[in-house]
Image 1 (cartoon, helix red, strand yellow):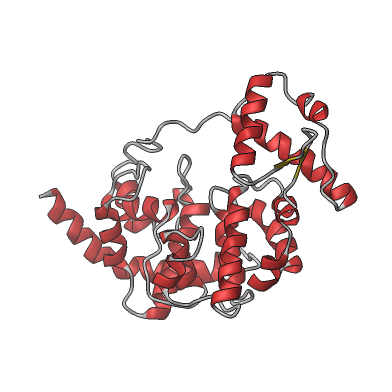
Image 2 (cartoon, rainbow, N blue to C red):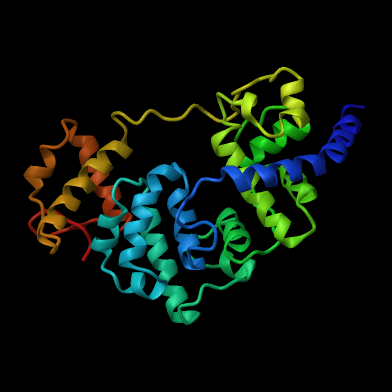
Length: 309
């Protein structure tokens, strides 16, 4: 019975939701530099890689500087690893920068510096997963493909099913739902993906949804049910940052970036100087080893550290 009621609600709400979200998107979409046809497909891909696990507001200055330095795949492919890691700055998860450069080399060498517009080919590129391939297909090439990220899953689950999206990996049901409600019209499907994702990012947020300004509150089954289980998560709580290996790795890389930025030649930072950065020497040594394994630093014969050359 519940499933039948959900299906009826989805069918009845589908068109009003699409119309209201499209109008809301046109009037309220954030003016990000890679939107509204102002970026190349490569620029859109860079924005998607940078935005993974990072707020878009933080990404904008990094993306702008990055695209100014390396406007296409061929330019990034020729950059030194040290330059790439330095430009990545404090975006976090710096292995993404190395994978993006690997992707650039493949695009430059194998595809003549033209980003492929086929979803399956995009998916075959280094560092490109299903979400990024789908997002680039939709936002850069205007393809009809369901884009499924945390924000979209949350909005669809709340509005159409009346239940909280509790995180974790996307289920088959969630994927089927996203494909089922995707407009058949290609242009409308792109606007749908953009508007649902934007709504989840700025209005239908995880902990404090702003239902009072939501353009589709009248169609929202979650609001009608009283926001049951708001903010519940099935994944483990987010790991604290203070004192973690992530923090230590970031401190080490920041010291190397500063040295690289000062002389442009990736001069080695003496081991003693690195060891002064963190009191727990065992943790520090483990983080140095992991950075070396990830290809993010070089350890010179005298023990000093440098960004890869």
